[in-house]
Image 1: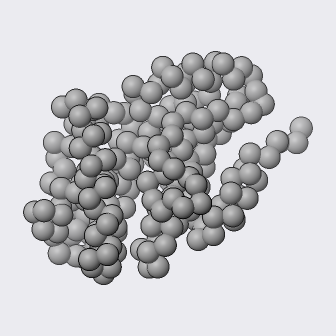
Image 2: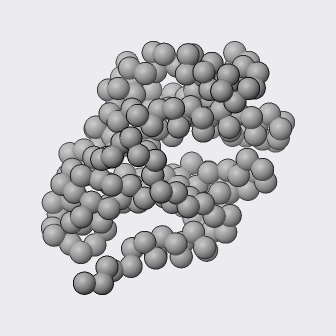
Length: 206
């Protein structure tokens, strides 16, 4: 399967999924939990090729997540949308293989630092953004990574702002310590989120 074609499909599915909150908020909460569970299950997938390979077993991934959460399997219409949304979220967590050359170029251009370089970004992080934003940045030269995102709070259905601290390979931006859970902070207030991002980026005192 071609990753560009899959990405177009995954994005189209995600766009169809999230407006369902207007129809059934309770079912939307379940759907969101399933997407997050599947994304977490894909944490060990660290390359685009492996992610595409796992897509062949997508139905098993969905069934396993539904069993673990002890919820009913979604309908044949909704199930594929949940799968695609989860695979898109995991893809956006990766400095994708087709982005590696660009990431390496940006890192090289940044030199020895100090400073931060953006490796990957998708979506809008403006004041009106509700979901779908993802950005991965890296501090030069030590490889400290920061994944910032906007999701939906499963309880309030309002924007949920997140930060994950990662360890990246300083010259390529590839993820290291893939077996470790990233340090995560979440906020319901956008300004607090922005302040936390700024705090992470504060220069390290020598």
